[in-house]
Figure 1 (cartoon, rainbow, N blue to C red):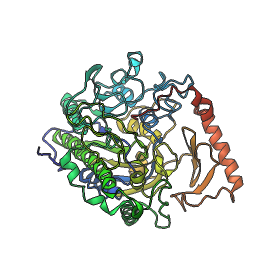
Figure 2 (cartoon, one colour):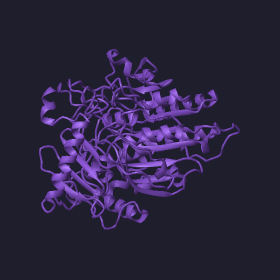
Figure 3 (cartoon, rainbow, N blue to C red):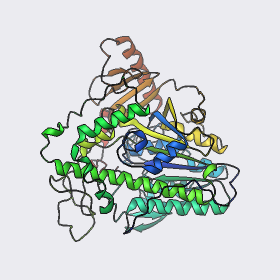
Figure 4 (tube, rainbow, N blue to C red):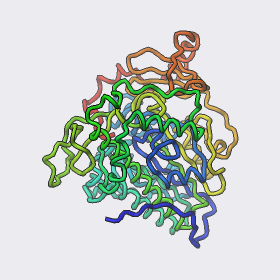
Length: 523
């Protein structure tokens, strides 16, 4: 099958641009800080890189460490626990952990639709359970005029589902899900452009979230690339990041993850290389569909009048899937589906992840992964492009957070951001100006916790003592200063406790016993 590489040309069609700007928000899933070319990757991502050339790359932008919490913050402008989604979509009977958006929260779509925009979405919702009981929190009930995608966190890419078209369950469909979401995004953009209204489109891809599945022709492009191993690939990414100016050369590359062997000691090199090859193919597929989305905007004559935002919901995932079936029948369905050494992933029958071995490459140069709140778990690329209104190729080094998306989008649209939000608009930073900095930022997920104030960050893994880092000098968190800065640790601990109390964060040991036992296997 011939697969078109969508690389937008920037040519505008004859249609006159709307007076108010359109907004296209593109969210990747489980994509690490260094997984796209313009952030240091060896994976070719020409469409995402083209957005970066036309716009601004943020070097210190943060998410909320995991899919559901980040999506809740993105949609509402609140911290995840304030929005009711402090963990996943299970109801733990505590205000910050109801697993579904609070009724008092308004979403981006509700705000923009109320301001005269046509709001559409394709992709992963995952901020409430899929049951009819939670219908009031489904996308159409939360401000979107059109929705196609999945309520849950992930699944088979070649027969995705169950999928929703609006409020209608359309079951499992054939087709590669990343391409499907690109096609539906383009369709919704064309519909919106024809309506004459300014539009907001939210493209929430599942790629490159596990399972590692990608079209064979896409995987073949990367089959040889990763045989040199994670140590060499990670070092090369770091060197490119320094050369690009993304990373201060005085920050040491974080040590190899403690769960990962030196590449020379790895016994299954071919199998390991195949895992990263599929991940790279999934990133490549994502990029191709970003191109499809941008092309649809350009064909509508709206390229210069549209703000594009591209980011990821958390750092790369170190999760290791146990042997399991793909859940979809194929002629090869009797083959082992999980992380089975010697069984290369990629086809529809496989159901594997790439674990910490390659996740620590995706998160170069930082420590830890998705679900942790060290820099590797919470750092995301953020690219903003908006015609000629932003300086092309610029780097923005000020700190930003996912809570800032709501006020940014509201300001661009000329709408009022809802009361109760915690963020502030990124628009001045996008335009190369200054803004009032956050006094502090907080994180908590599964007992992993952190607070950042200025250049200082206090962080701890669940059940372990606080660590303290000066991120201006050591953003890769290699030199813990807690022992020599006890007064600062005390002051920042109090900051964290104040944030946690205000934001409905509970100590992990008090909420964990209420868990249902269903540890989100597709998040």
